[in-house]
Length: 283
Image 1: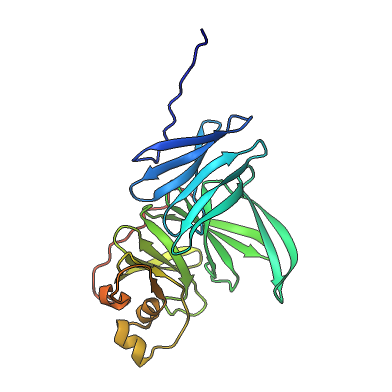
Image 2: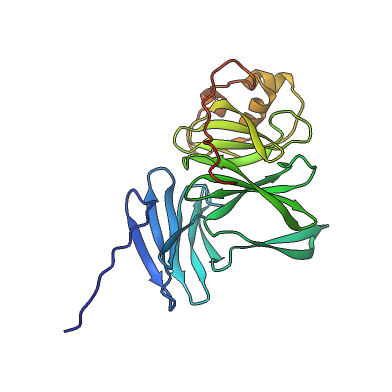
C-alpha cells in the first residue's frame, strides 16, 4: 500500500481559507487565500515562503492564481467593475523592474533598473524626493510598508522607507494635494469605511497627514486633476482638493451622489487627525 503524506497549506495572511490550485516541477505552488481586510488574493508558495499575488488593476479585491509552469510563469484572473473577469500572466521568478521610454505614442527605449522582492508592488509615481524627478512608491503586500525609490535617467538612485499603513488602506493616487509647489503626495482610501487620507511627502519623508472624509464604497476613484479653487468646487466640498475628488468619482451602485456621502474635512482644519503610519522599522 502506498503511503501518502498530507501537508497543510495555510497562507499566514488568510483569515477565511486557503486554496491550492497548481504545482510545477520545482515544487512551487499557486492558489488563493481569503482575508477579511484585503479580499481574495493569489499566492505563490516557493521555498517555504508565501508571496501574495494581487493584480494592480483589480478593483474588486479579487485575484486568483490558477496555474504555474516550470519557467515560473503564473496565470490566473483578476476582477474589475463593471467589466468583469480578466486573465493575467505574471513572471514571478525575478521581481525585475523595467522602464520603457515613450515618445509620440511609441516605445523608444528600455532600461532594466534592478529587482525588488516579489511581495512589493508598485503604488504610484510622483515627485516624492522634491528633486523635480519622477519617483516610484512601492507597497509591501504583507506588512503595509511604503518604500520610495528615487529614479533618474532610467536608474534607481536611492531608496527610503517611509513607514507602514494598515492593509485595509490602499493607495488610490498621487498628486499635489497639499498645494506645496514641487511636491507629490499620496491619497489612500480605507477599503472598509471608504474614508480618504492624504499624506504629504517631501524629501522622501511623510511630513503630515489629514483626513478628507469618506464616500460610500459603491463609489470608486476615477482620477485626480490639478485645478484652481472655484465656486463650484467650493460648493461641493469646501476645499478645492475635496471638490475635485468628488467630481472624479464614479458610482458602480447606489443612486445618490458621491457628495451626499462625503464628510468633508478641509486640510489644515482643527479637527484632530489620527496618524496611520507607525515608526519606520528599518532604514
